[in-house]
Length: 206
Ligand SMILES: [Zn+2]
Image 1 (spheres, helix red, strand yellow):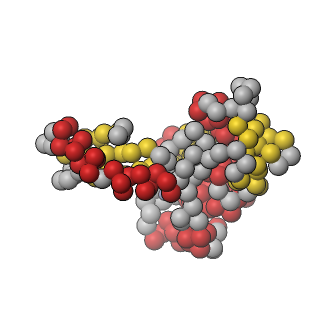
Image 2 (cartoon, rainbow, N blue to C red):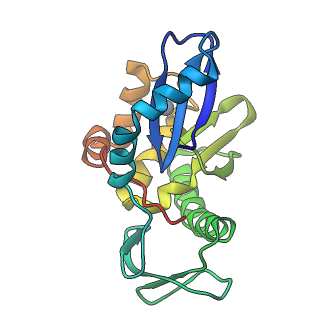
């Protein structure tokens, strides 16, 4: 079974995680590749179970993009586009990622601008990427905020909450009480929104 291995100094045993269909294994430096292979092999049933929870989407499945539902069709011309409530994708990771990024950016840029205007925040540049374990990040020193393109699959109220979360990091870099106090003055239902969508998985399109 294929997996991505990362060696860590601060871990004491082998750990396996399945994120978006990728098997990620972390292990201490002292453990040999052979032992790791055996461990992964023993866990194969569990790994398959995790994979099945989030299978690659197929034709006619429903995909939610920016809060709207679309019927998915994989097509054999190299384009990705939407037409009414139909989503047409060429099954190529790079093209699909480019399409998702363009559309996530188009919406989030505007929404971000709206909040910045409300909160009198200026000169923050935005970046977009595909991240495995975070929705966004904020580097106040560089006046920079990054958003995960996968936000495109989440409801709009969740996207708002993440935008405001990152904006609050401009004032508090940690997740302290002060941070949440500020965030909750901007968005009182922040914690409910996070809880509501906690178990949503990101659809796999490739
Ligand atoms: Zn944070």
